[in-house]
Image 1 (cartoon, rainbow, N blue to C red):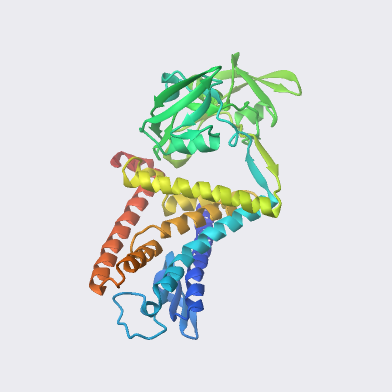
Image 2 (spheres, rainbow, N blue to C red):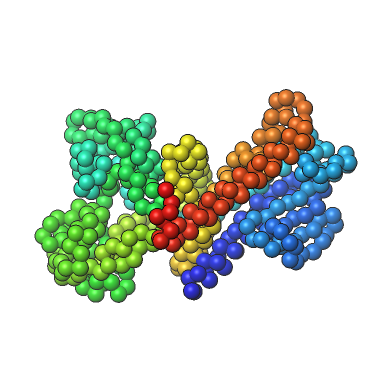
Length: 447
């Protein structure tokens, strides 16, 4: 219950802040061009509280699922008087800037937040930006069936040359059940293959079955779990399980599912000498409706931590947000073409859970990082060419600029009505999708 309350409170604060920043972008641009702003609202529906200053009603409304800035004459269904303070009385280029200002503020916020985090603590995986050298291949997976071996280096995947793991992982995840051309380097020869990632989990992400070359060093232990009780310590290098050499933590995870809760002998290397302990895995629940699995409470995610100077932090933040933006667009494009499942889209429940987990962690860094990610997603989503959204307004302005006249109010009205129905149906689908992933019993109903 406490985690639920934390999630709800954190979600309300984060979304409220996102909406405030977004709508302030529209508000500031409108004020700059002398467009009369009638309402600045956090939330939709009935007005709960607020105040009026000048010509604007600043309010908090009953439905906390967004917000809006209402400008005079903005709605095509409104009666237009030709007043110079009305939105449609201004040149199209000014209306364009007002429309794009909201998403731009969200994108700038994402860059600023992430740059601030990197200036305080830049923590990243030691392997993600390295060459994609394969450390281990899971049995009975697409990579294993294609003959991929440990030590192979991926030199090309779906048109990306000399990729890092940072490029390989999302490319595979967003290509479930879709052929990917892969070229690997083995010794002095290059082998070209076509592999098809397998859709897995509730989200139906694609997996190939290979993992990076990364020694299984213990980086974290779950309190009260078998590994901690047996005396394994952070910094230990896992060498073998029941005498079988372990090349990657994923190999140990696979072995545990085979051995289940039977006692095992784990050999680790500590300060140059081997130490063997005996323990038994425990069946523990998994997040997101996944099946329970056997675990001993070991995490192996080697990272490096540093602080970046201002210029480097901004540059890295722009790079990360740019890469994330292209991934979001690729996700949308593949979802429209029905090449990936809707299950990969997180709705308010999934986002709330992620925000709650970040808020429960120590320090402000995790919460700021998830806030930056949500802000970027919100900015890009609002730029989609869907009427009612900012991207729809921009699209109509571009069309009007090309045809050199305004689209008739009747046509605009029909467009907005259709777009509203589409967004309602999309919201229902996303929320249902969230419920399916949160309540595993509903999963059988989702095709």
